[in-house]
Length: 366
Image (tube, rainbow, N blue to C red; front, side, top):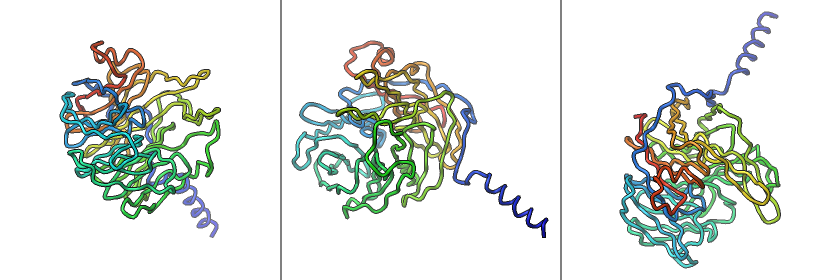
């Protein structure tokens, strides 16, 4: 009897020490090593919006689209991978039907353009010719939004608050499901609070939702369309990073620190995300950026394994941010915003009018 009891205790101990089956812990070294990516095209993104820029660009039917913010209008600019203009769709600034005040996010899904305006609390819908079709009101219960994506008349959103991930019925104008973040207090943020939320992106090839945490440690979660968690991906970092936290002083509110993943992209096999998106801190009364390297982590999107690290020496020392917007069989589409020399070097100092540039890499993975 004593031997049986000890065996049971041993089994309990063994299973309690195992990691959950849906948790994948990667060390800092990719399974298949580091690959150098070759830059095939670089072009300026003139007047690219500064408001949620990581949510206002993408790839649709082998075209790059991004949102320009002009004094009297927003412009959705469609270009080839080489930067050649294809077409533009203009959205007037205002409160009327088909107009907008603020660019919370821009998505194209099944030949419909969804423009999310958090100021007017509505989503305006256009066809691919720019014709205004409809607007959907967003209820006040949805709270402050950090990230959005759309699939089958459902707005999936991530928030800044305790309610960090949810799905919203666009036709019924109501929240269907919302997940609470146990690590975030259910109250307004205070100065110095850790920031533990992030953004989401739908993998349309599988219908799965990926949620990436803004701060370190590096972590991405995978959900089904009903927001049931399927997988948690973690990765060790090669260096130490500052925590992301709320900076609240007088009327100024910001999130500062080192940011891990604020953008993602997918192909048939892999999930792509920046290793370091940006670094921000407050000095005196100024919000400043610190240098980062524009590097990409590639994970197997089914089992969560860290497979490749992609890098190019021309993207070292970015004094700004680094986003990834899409992946094709041939290309990886990224954006660099920079306050100093990286943009100048990439564009060879030719007629620089913007701090944003699209950088198109040859895809060495497929």
